[in-house]
Length: 199
Length: 321
Image (cartoon, rainbow over all chains, first blue to last red; front, top):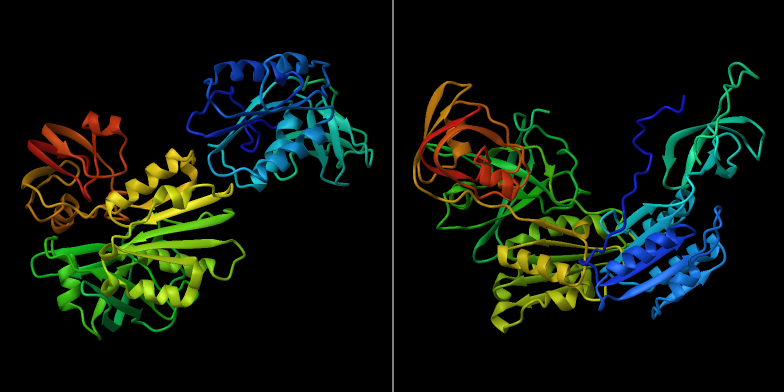
């Protein structure tokens, strides 16, 4: 039902130090803090490190205090995803070629960060992405354009128009969201079983 | 895709000696009308039928992609080369008809870039000139760093300086002025792309300076056509065609295969595009790899060869062709 094998579905890796870069900007959210602690540990002592961490998390995991304990020269903590993403944008505005960006967190968080890095024409060989925490999706209703956050089920009622949306693997990097398509358009009321598939 | 069979007939409408060693040729569609569209960075392969052989050399299109009434190419005379550039210099005059392959782009602009830095040396300016025509009307900043031996070799630089002003930086070896690649590439905004076309040392210099400044490879672009080197003669057996072919010192393997009447694929004829990659079935001896396409592992394996530029020193060579 989900239609798998769609090429736009993002794939993620594990963050590793990319010592080809000269300026390393890490941005993590929630459970991603654990991955930040791991990769920061692997970075050489003389590397130019900058860290943005967002404490907002659906799972309640906050690694802010552990990151502060590292005594980094540039660590900035933000209470919300919106503020962390804004800080990423403001930082990149002053960065020069030679920068590497490391993103870790929920899929929606990664998507919002990649929207920003793409605006600066940062490519896949400059931006690493690791998925941690919730696999919940941001779902864009193709009918009323509403973005539905934190969707965990294969079918979701759109918060904007109430349609029953099938959550597809078709992902828009521009919108940083998966496409949701009305599931019972041809047979109104015939909705397949709803299951939690993105937890 | 049939990678090369269709050619365009063009007629030479102007030949100009623009520097002591470079001639510029203007070509129009021999059948009338516009030529096929292209973009900055494209090249065409010019077919040159000499007495005993056919030369097919790639040349970048340097005229504006916005004007398809003609193409322009520039050819640097190489007296030590295999003869293609001498053919163009000595035997191609106004009114001559030539066959050329359709334009191919192995050196395209990155259209999502936030800034473009163009670096060229000598006749390597040709693809860059068409790129500048593509960039001029856009809103993305660009700059050119162009190096030649001396002002008398600076025809294209003078033209570009007049047209582009402060965006163009000219360097003359005769003044002892070299491009400081590290300084040019330092502190560039995110999303900057660099493009380099020129001698091998210049290309390596730009790549090394960019990497040293932390640039990721996706922002570094270069065109490094290798002319097929002259080498020792050798023999090859083409298994599918069931013929033996002799490759003389001044002919490339690809040219020898073509001269034997076998239709082999190619696009760039300079060891960069990968189109002519051919499996090696048997080898007694070694392959002399001159391409920039095969990986080091492939080269070491002796199982693949790029006939456009590579040769062999062998007692037996069998190719799947």
